[in-house]
Amino acid sequence: MTVGVAWEQIGSQAGEDALRRLINESPQDFFGDVARRNIHWFDAQAKQWVNFDLAAQCWAGFAANTGEFVTSGALAQDESPWSSVLDESQAPYLRWFVGAQTNASFNEIDRHVLQGRGANKALIFEGDRWDPSKNGGRGGPVTEQQFSYRGLLLEVVVRARVLTNLGLKTGDRIALNMPNIPEQIFYILAAQRLGIIYTPVFGGFSAKTLSDRLHDAGAKVVITADGGYRNAEAVPFEVPEK
Image (cartoon, rainbow, N blue to C red; front, side, top):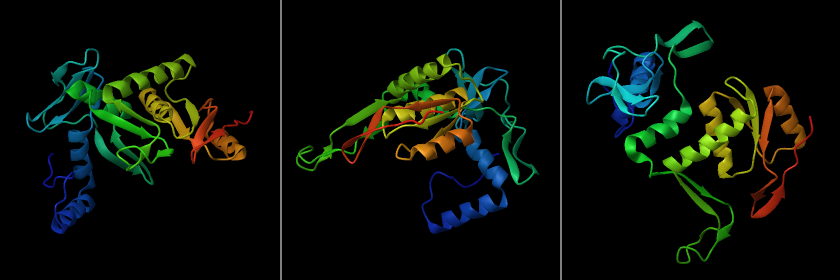
């Protein structure tokens, strides 16, 4: 089903009011429409990643094994990968998109590469040390790293291999106790890719707080660093022994 208000653009107060009414009156229609058009879902039967193409009025996407563009033969125009947008039968415990499968890492990285945007910037990292002489005297970060979607994909796949080599699998739990560096994002996306549950623990927390978080999460592995930067100072990390 296609609803009548574009969720991406709100050009007026009247548009915002109409969108609010739609969400309140028919949340399943609204979120179902957004999910059909803007998220790629995994069709396990056809081995395809697909979303609904409004222009072609069909489900289309990419073959999981080859990455080639495909038109889905498994889903009709009026069908969806899920049996229900929202299951409230055990409220307040809610289930969204029942029966459907997707992956955050694929949606955030892979599909952009497959759609020809691999050279586009995906991530810009700036350290907190500032050089006032850069950019013609306007200043700029001492450390800056830019990653394209293709470059980010490679970094994430490497970290996913690290997690796999540690014996981790879907459903396992890890903790990320890292400074503000790109590797933190790489490991988050790698965990999402593998279906590993992760808890990010701020690198400035105390050893006791970190220990409590590890215990509460039941983390099998801690991904950390030997130090980081804070206010332009090198700060060593100390990880408590379990």
